[in-house]
Length: 451
Image (cartoon, rainbow, N blue to C red; front, side, top):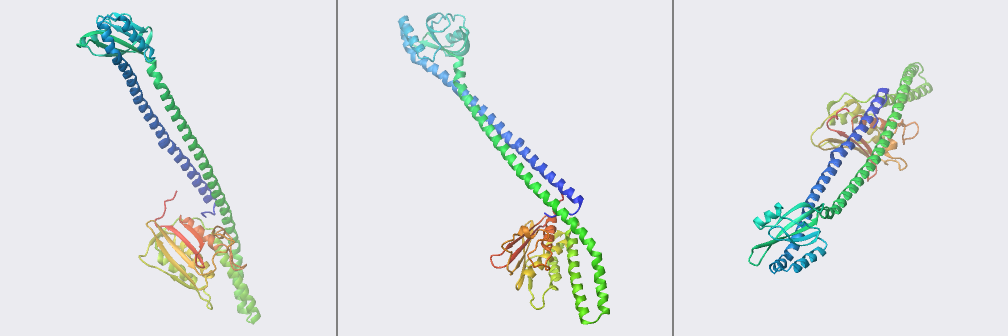
């Protein structure tokens, strides 16, 4: 972009890029706080819900283990109790205790008195509500309780004879910590994995944000330096133009008067040469003034075809009578209204057409391309194209020209770039596949809002 020339403009440019940098930083913070952190929080909640479900499932599995053990020995215990074979009852309890999953196993009669036991058990359940409930209902009971000072999970399993009559019950105890310990490892692995993923994600985002910020800051600094440089060039151009304008007017006027008073051929030849050089310098001064104008502010709707025809007419008088170039505008479809500074945009088109006409061998073609939100003006010539040692970026720099010394100021394309950038558009140059050069001006169809 080439919006420059005054101290105020330079300050405005700095403010705009500072605001842009702030918006970038704010958008990064918004991305972090409104997307990344909520995702991490939701994933943490999901893991917690899943772990609770897993805990419930694990608890149920451990309870089922005890129930299966109880069912496996209930029938042998029933037979042993019916035969009053206490030694056999004890053997079955010892076998259960040796499995290692049971903290204590015991058998009681229907009155709650201990018959046999293995491991840590309660000696007397005559006053136990759970035992009483089991005797009354004949259904299995379970609860967390304390046995020998330890928290255990107890299952009270009824023992029936062959006729289905309740003849006693057994109590199987498992340490409550077994339930927690079996789940703790899974829970630890889940939260450690979540923490690693969260830290890795935040680290990646932090590094990405930092690199993006550095890159954006570098680009902003480069653009700001470019604007400052162009501001200095614009101020210099304006100063030089004003200093040269008055003397050139004086020289042109006096040369004209001398031509009227010195009719001899030699004087006429010399004075004509002087006036020619003065006209050239006057054109340079005008270009310097065009280059140093402040950014556009007055946008009015104008028919783009009319603007192109006016620019075409402005350069036609510069044609060489001996070797004219055909400038053809290919206008199809509806005429498009564009919000722009018509005077400045016409100046840009004049400079593009002048360059194309000077480079062309026989013709220059102008086309329009439109989309929903953009208008593109394409100018093609059949000349030699851009020099291989130059690129488009170099050619739009002020005072850069490929023309012979004395035939170009190097300001034409710079003025075009300045005007198009002020309209928030794009200006590009490239060689065609066929011979020649293509210049593209892309402009928004609606005037962008000022920042």
